[in-house]
Image (tube, rainbow, N blue to C red; front, side, top):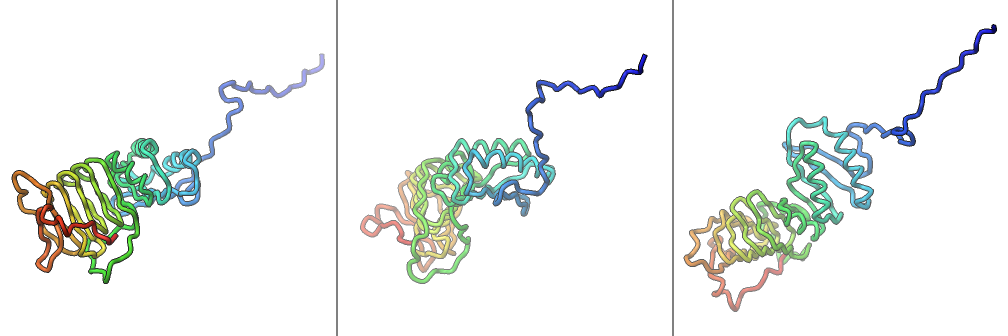
Length: 266
């Protein structure tokens, strides 16, 4: 008998793996799309999202990018999300927060140029910075500067730890709790109780005002002037804080009847 020829035996193809493409390994520290970055500074991370991709295309890339970066931290750290002109709704912000939480990161602040995104973020309880961050102390600007943004209107209660930054006036329909803060280049109007920190005219505009139904703020600032509020009147009534040569003064809103106007500064 002739010796049988040996033939290679083919391994059977598993139905569970047939037709499945290998997932490319995520290279550490490398963004999968241009403009997607995660940077660390002073105990916080800054996640920047590009504005030129649809969310349905960007979101999978964000998830993969976080997987490739998670070796960089060993404890839960706060994240500032910079989304620029990208429009994010509440469901997308919640998606992002859940994904960050899975990688031991905590979404804390949304930095945006879109008013709708700022409103969605504040409604969910995140700190918000809309536009360029105004300086806490600034010199008076000559003349009346032109507005750089529309007023920011929020119908919500600002809880402790929430910060709102805006390049124009800020209007809050709701309370501002102790531990919350508002920094606005223009006026601050609170249709409720103000117990946190309010900084109006943050870019140096001394004509800015702070108006609220109940003035019980931890601290008031107008431009580079600082004041603490006295105990609120009982029963409370609407009051206006404004800058004078003697510092910040507080007056009943009804006494402003003929001269009251929202500041024309940003």
